[in-house]
Image (cartoon, rainbow, N blue to C red; front, side, top):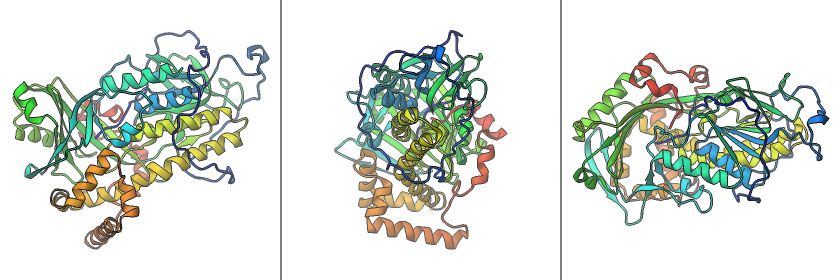
Length: 502
């Protein structure tokens, strides 16, 4: 339903950046950590050691009394969406010198459904008050506009936010922890060797105007069209096109939607639409596989008309691409880590991305601190491997189950609709997952009935299609080569689709 941030753009000043003082708050963020790896640091666990070459420069004239260069940040984070703000907060709260680079002025609009499920809420900084526009207690499910059924819950299922306020508030928390923010900053590339890099412990972040910012570790959170992700070598196996409209409605219409969302299983394989109420505005969107741009646009138009909303003029109509990583896609290169959309971390079935951004950003910030402290390439590599372990043990497991659910949904949308609307345990599972009291991966692992049901569906699809359980985007590692660009049809349907996913 959502994802996070597009690539950075444009500094306004060419003055050199000098790190600020220590963070105002120190200590651990309390987030989960991956296992400490003592194995061979050359083992390939989804990271690439990259080149941390460059001269061993002493640069005594630039060093402070402690032997550290005064112009080198501990951690530079690229992108101030949920992933980047979370990474900056985690590193700053540990007492490190952190610089957060963002292309736009804040707050800025971001195409996004804005659903805040339990895992997102649980990953927020202490004291963070969600700027909720509505609290969802009911979900109406339909199948291409038919067979609609509403399920209700006494307890809140999830909340709805507008991204401009949410993102800006996350950045404020990072700043309060000690991170420094610079907006209007375009990052064109990072370098880990060459004349811009003074020593083997340093990464050069090169801005569009040629200015260079130095860091001991870099976190790329610059969205699904990430330049940092390109440096790391992120590979993408599933790309989807989302179209969305923000539609102001009169009070009588807004009241009909208050506390209730609509999920419509769509006409193309893997597609669905949604209506999220946010006060006097309805966020209406659809998503489907890239390459179906014209059909996706037609689905949105038909969806809006079917809802009786065609007479209301949208204030914003936008599009975006969501991109999921392949299983073997790297998460780091040398002293550079990627998280959120920049790493292709996204729930494959629903394309929900905010919780993935918050959780991976927090982990990236924590492990970036360890990378920054690493005295050599071997130690930095070990810390990067630990970050990969932490991501794969949590979000990686969730993504694997999500891919299987997408494969089922693409081939049997009617079956899933019948189950979730007519089978009470299925509805309870949906409610538990959205509230954060359970995860899809955890249910499949621990619930024998859920596991057997998914296995039966897997086998049925194997028999019917002859293509196995992979589904779209799973195991298609060759698709990553052109995943950063949309087809002409997609571009026509959504000019903004070349930007990051929401």
